[in-house]
Amino acid sequence: MTQNLADTSRPAADATAHEAGAGASRGWWRDAVIYQVYPRSFADSNGDGMGDLPGIRSRLPYLRDLGVDAVWLSPFYASPQADAGYDVADYRAVDPMFGTLLDADALIRDAHALGLRIIVDLVPNHSSDQHEWFQRALREGPASPLRDRYHFRPGKGENGELPPNDWESIFGGPAWTRSENPDGTPGDWYLHLFAPEQPDFNWENPAVADEFRSILRFWLDMGVDGFRIDVAHGLVKAPGLPDIGGGDQLKLLGNDVMPFFDQDGVHEIYRSWRKILDEYPGQRIGVAEAWTPTVQRTANYVRPDELHQAFNFQYLGTSWEAAELRGVIDLSLDSMRPVDAPTTWVLSNHDVTRHATRFANEPGLGTQIRTPGDRGLGLRRARAATLLMLALPGSAYLYQGEELGLPDVTDLPDEVRQDPSFFRQAGQDGYRDGCRVPIPWSGTEAPYGFGPTAGGPSWLPQPAEWAELSVEAQTGDPTSTLELYRSALAVRREQADLGAGTEVEWLDSPAGTLAFRRGSFVCTVNTTAEPVRIPAPGRLLLSSADAVVDGGETVLAPDSTDWWAV
Image (cartoon, rainbow, N blue to C red; front, side, top):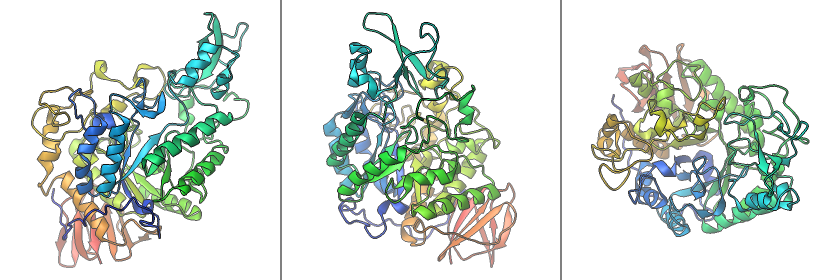
């Protein structure tokens, strides 16, 4: 595969990008490209097999040169790691496996010096069961006032032996676990929508809201540029915690408003947070991870007085099919336009099968897939899908390693898996480990530069074939996926009509293809397995495959995307 490009030298990084007023006329986040780092799998500085903050810091120049605008860090807080850090014991401390607060401070400072912004994860729906509040609530027994900061309830049945309601955990099994009183007798039940080690906060208690406003200020004072809000849709539960009235509730998620998700009360919380964000210089932002039944309900989270962005999960789940893609693109743009919020686009993250593997399989299998499929086909489609995504108006999210064309590791042995939902019944598929395998940087032997020593440890094993996919192996190869990403991000910076705005002008094109104009830029997409001949829209800027320009016509390669200057 080859790619054609114009001069795409990247402008020097703006070291003052994080200061007040930078991009104030439009909001830097409106067309930003944001790169997700999963800390335990990005770079290991000390050779213990676990990625860490100093490792991330050492690789910031790579991200600057890749061409992204901001870096989102998945949780690195103090945690027992029952759910890879999404069970937080102390929101103001760094877990020793990742480093120290001084390491976090140095990372933020270095990123800003390189013109990169830093977004950190915030986990407000639940804490770890090792959090001081929860531990005191257990020690002090039923009379403890701290119990009202969580959802403790008496059980049903003659002796309280049944859960308070029929809610099911996202990870499988009941969403309730029975506590033990200080005297050893069975006690009340507590709510956990995820693992039992992750008790849900009760956001009706003012102390919870006060604590999180303080946590926001702690990290804003350290200089972070924003927060990605985990389970942003889950903080408020319906009054009385009513039964749902049936099992297999996981299948209802994303289709109906549930009594524990997407309740209208969450929006008052985010209005209060927006006031705090607006107090700080440099345009600090909030990004909602909000699973909602419709894109229109997602838009509620980004009204002008709430958060700045919300993930577009409807787009992530769209098949590689022209008509379906066009429908979701139009719906997404139409839904965000009334609230004056940018649409976001994302293809992969730490919770779903990488899109190079999803597109290698038949459509309709969901976002967690256990089979590798046709890897050549998957990579072609992934490259094409990336150029399509980066051509759309709004902000794009990249997941670490996708710029290397990494597939999911679908054949991890059961004994090495660490996803907590893998070990529970009837919950998520539990195959998220496949997208979390540490990425390869260099060399021919594992851990491929992830750690400082050849043959050193890695918390999840890396496939032997990843030596050919490393940053080192792909750098300078004009046919590589890494160089395609670098070129695409450089062109995106140079083309004023890319990223910004809220409109696309659809052009006539054959069945199975897409073509749209954005000012002096045109994007053409072929989602079919056959080459398609069309009039050449202009001068070819970039191709994900082997576009052939023949006089006034061009042949769109199968499963490809091309960029044109007109």
